[in-house]
Amino acid sequence: MKILVVGSGAREDAICQSLRKSDRYNDVFCAPGNAGMRLFGVQTVGIGELEFEKLANFAIENDIVYTIVGPEQPLVEGIVDYFQDRDLKIFGPNKEAALIEGSKTFAKDLMKKANVPTAFYEEFTDLGQALEYVETKDQFPIVIKANGLASGKGVFIIKDMGEAIDVLNQLLTDHKFKTDKVIIEEYLDGEEFSLMAFVNGESFYPMPIAQDYKRAYDGDKGLNTGGMGAICPVQNIDCDVVYQSYKDVLKPFVKAMNKYGVNYTGVLYAGLILTKDGIKVIEFNVRFGDPETEVVLPRLKSDLSKVILGLLNNEDIDDITWKDQGVDLGVFVASKGYPTEPIIGKTIGPKSQFQNQQLKINFAGVSESNNELVTNGGRLYVVKTHANTLQNAQDKIYSYLDTVDQTNVFFRRDIGKNAY
Ligand code: AMP
Ligand code: GLY
Image 1 (cartoon, rainbow, N blue to C red):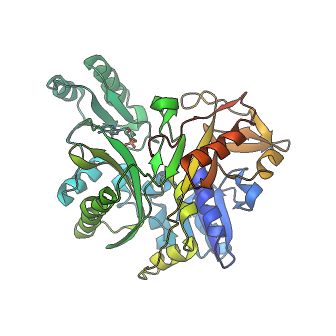
Image 2 (cartoon, rainbow, N blue to C red):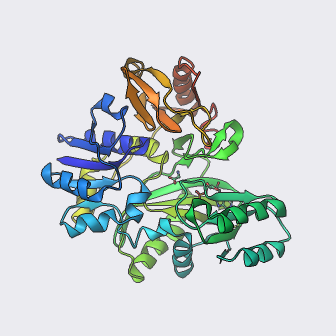
């Protein structure tokens, strides 16, 4: 099968690698992809993720059987509707369903209708009213979120009134992240985990849970990032809790989507937190999580390309199987300065450095110059392994990373610490 993956990050690389593991031969293309992916057989296509017409033409001209969309932006902007109007198979939610990620208020409203537990919240477009509301709060922290897409950076944990004034001004006066609406919500305390599921209409098929290490530095310090590493599974979260999140979150939410006319096919991602009052939803996303996918898909024993084709053909899928032993761990290497001002265009080593070692790598913000890979974004590549214990996985990954020239890059040394 010829399959096109849209996106350019390590998540898309992981999807491509998983598709290439099929027992039939799959020809996998990634648009636009990145220079690192090419080292391991992915064919990159120089078309941007928002160039819908060119992507659709590529799919037609190259007999692509179906397209998978990695990032949220093309989904929110209607790539699925565009492809479907041209009778092309594409895996992901349509524009309306993508509002579940594109509009926090849309998602909250659906959660309320579905009786899915989430943080108590109020929404505001007016700065004065938002400030008045914060003044009624006698307890900090509180959480302020920009309403639209913000690449994981539009969430602010607010410690005092001064911070609230500053952030509300950034969002409602300066319209940072192009927002004109904020959500102010209750702060939830507990262990976070990510639960993804393949969804088609009323059917959903959960994947194993994972944990994303979002802060930039060790000990969960520093700013939120797109994810500095991930682990799957999360042993500290009990099986009972996982089943409960199918029952109290996935099932009622999928039911509500169907009841209220949200026609969903794709991966649904629930960011969950286990509080002392039970499981609550932090957010829903309408796609594979990043960096969770990089450690979840290697555990898939079934053929991803067949699972997705089955979903697109509205077949019942009853045999998605996953490895149930050991740990999959991934540690991201990022450009110095990330997440605020990552250095761009600096070498991270000759291509051979990445080809000649035993660990798996998925590439993200890298490009190529004079046979070397150079930084072209914040998060560069994720080094991954499967091992029987967390300690063994960490030993394998960090003994490799210790050999890496760290002049232009950094990484966390404690990925996986909360899971065991
Ligand atoms: P998000 O971009 O919605 O995934 O949020 C980024 C991170 O902010 C989450 O992973 C949480 O760590 C934190 N966060 C978001 N909402 C809340 C909340 N209501 N209470 C506590 N932490 C939150
Ligand atoms: N790992 C968080 C996300 O994919 O949004």
